[in-house]
Image 1: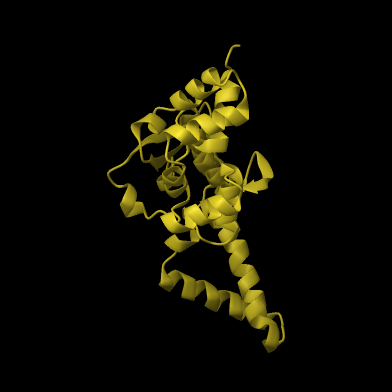
Image 2: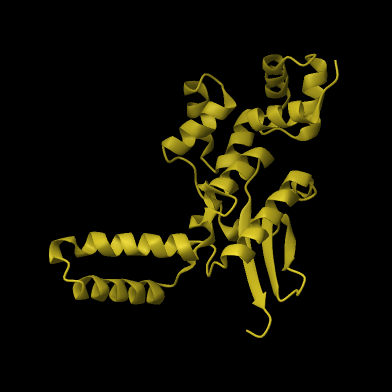
Amino acid sequence: MGVTVEDIRSLRNKTSAGMGLCKEALVQSKGDMNKAIEYINERSDVISRLRNLTGAKIGLCKLAYEEAGKDFEKTVSLIKERGWDEPIEKEDMDKGEGVIESYVHGKDQKLVALVEVKCKTDFVARNEDFRKFAHEIVLQIAAMKPEYISKDDISEEKMSELKDIFTKEAQSEGKPENILEKIVEGKLNKYFQENCLLEQKWFKDESKTISNILDEATQKMGEPLIISRMLIWEFGK
């Protein structure tokens, strides 16, 4: 039987194995997805793949894999549910691969957006889906003009300034002192959603945030992805 690109992508999502190995597994298993997964697990270290994808410690990856019945997708979900996944630091990706994607808006070409997206391997950097992901991110940046990539990028000084502003706003509106903290927290969250790329709703589908899109792309690619830098340049500003 013929192996389609969709079959390969589906198997990759289930195992985080390379596209070449996924194709080989499907050919050898004659399209049987379960047998293809077994084939991959016999030839590729599933724990290493889980470690690369989630950042979780090897021991925790092994534990989750057993508890999830050796189902790769369920294991990833279990690791995240338990908070065992560890964020990949930008410094860890400095020697990796990636792309700089650009977008120039409109016929008058008076707005340009740039984004740098990093991955670990050249294989992923050249992957069409990775390039599409980078392009979606640069479109979001051009459309929504975030000031920060993550709320973690906001300085302590700026956070203190925001909290002071939001506290004074709530007080001027006569809000009771016992709920001021909750009101300020709500205003901060709204600020993050409007100004931090990862917190923003995806302008093409508001049921998802850019963080959700990043998680989906990371799982599809099978290795950590980081949106490391961005730039918005408007004519005359």
